[in-house]
Image 1: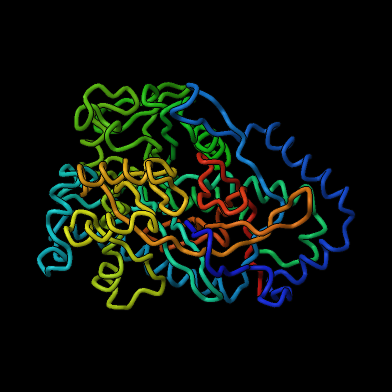
Image 2: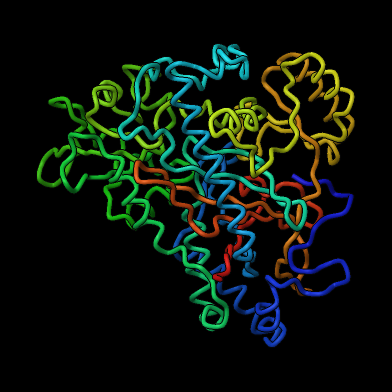
Length: 476
């Protein structure tokens, strides 16, 4: 989020218009290109995305409507020094999240120490009693994590959100890079950009390292999708294909002989690791929502008996809940003994009367989000809302205060996008992708940069009209 007013940090240009070091080589190249050729390349990129089918479904509009995620061909560039600091902060945070989940489902030391009020667990639908007392294979809860970062200054990166359930968007990171390399191969010989194309191989290796003890020397991996009508189905199919894993739906799996078995051309075969893109509630009709047809009856019983790894573990949603997010500085310190390297955005918990009063008094200046919301839905952006919209949202807040948190509108950094009139600044965020296994933490250099394509826009979500860019981390 960003305020439309106030000073902002431009990642390409300093205050007097000088090109910053990160963009120097790219801008030299760009200034030497013919503008009409660049416009043709821009149009070609859109045709490329349409051809390979990089779309996502939009909910709440025409059923099954598919939309192209706009791609901007000007890369977002991060220096090696900036990336080193970011990776230290991301690794610290991801370690803390995993330790937090282990503690919550076992001894709850953080609650006993008075650092987290117990009602944040007791009243939270993301906290699964079915996980109490159980440790996943290898002790890993969050195998794939997406940490949403925003930048407000030269060395000021903040965490906007933790995605510990089923973070999406990695296929766009990979396709954005492939598109850029196809369109501008000379750029990658001129500028030392760290690669991201080996992510699927690293993902498979990380998932196999998290296999249960009963797996053989080459654990089998499957991607569990809700099916073709899911908004991220393209990504599910893409990752399964790139990893060389099976793409399965719930109807392709069954529980037999204490294992989860997968339908193959040679009959049913045991599967060791399931990278699931199905929400907790739909995972197992015997343990969760009884009418679910997306999951596998009995999979939780096999899981708790050590017969399969589910990535990410059920119950991880408690760690990316937006009310829990406000405790993350305490959580990092409690489990690592260190101050957080990456700061949180200041957050008011509307469940607390004093905070609720402050938020209601200042709605026109704040961003208010649902605790379990995602995709930019169900939120209020005060500075761009009408008095009528603010009044209606205030009524929702008073009715269900515990359902919301509020944050200040930040003046986010901008990076250039390509327009018909040349380069123009737009607000961005960044979602680096993190792989966690018993062997360690692996952070892909870059991530998904989402960009608000409309001038002055505050929302980068693709579901709300945002686009994506290739993210470059420069080599040393």
